[in-house]
Length: 326
Ligand code: AHG
Ligand code: MN
Ligand code: MN
Ligand code: MN
Image (cartoon, rainbow, N blue to C red; front, side, top):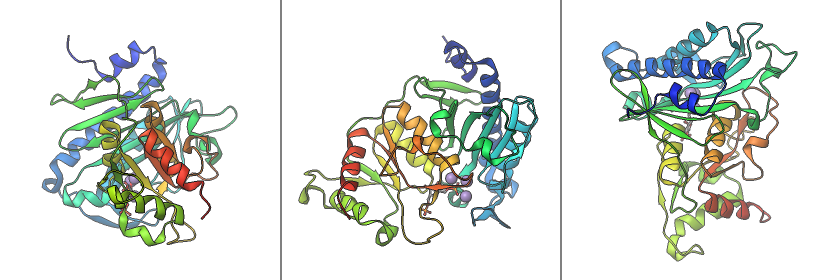
């Protein structure tokens, strides 16, 4: 039997047909973004723009192109009440009778585009609350537990789609006819690991508990852990989290004291929540180091968050380290 498409799998899972329609539009966008990325320098779309986004980052041309693809296709769907994006200052209203809100990081890891390293698209789907419309920020300020679906496309050696509607995590791979086909029916994160991902160049800015915890991983067999750890850092959250979902490990971008206005780098609504949803669905843990990311009541659409996620037993060691007084 041929591998299931995203639609077939979601139908088999008895997913709400309207939610399937939204996911289908998102996967079509990801296919289009994959195609743009594949051609890269041939179409002259690498490199930066002169614009700065609301996050204070210089936008790449492909940040804008990916954002426009998702924005245009989603807002054309009557089911969509509104969208929010890392690259948009404010949420954008869709149909006033729409049911769904889609939040996205159109291109994650965009510093890697110009060096031809994997990047991705991350998305999260919420239902619009009664009495709210999709142009107002408060409609989106729902905890990650309320996500109806979350996922990401990874544009790597193969383009893949990792998706959850709360019934485990499935992985699909893009074939050369432009369809995502099921290649892994149940992703499950091994509970133990010897691999960690963190940007070590920020070490001096971390909180003391994180310094102590990572210090023990680096000390390996010579420290209290009694085993050696290996380190990986791709600098595309999608690719680092994909590795964790595939073979275990932990990924963290913790609080740091570089900038009082931005104690964390990653965005709760476009990165923290969708990735935490997938990780919990695959049997892992996702925390700020002081509480579950999915339990946070968001205060702002572009809110930042400290993220540590991955193999359950290792995240528990990290949490234990954070219960120690600084
Ligand atoms: P984005 O490209 O969407 O702005 O996200 C970048 C994020 C994330 O993908 C990655 O884990 C992290 O930034 C890397 O940050 P450093 O360059 O500080 O390591
Ligand atoms: Mn960015
Ligand atoms: Mn990102
Ligand atoms: Mn991005």
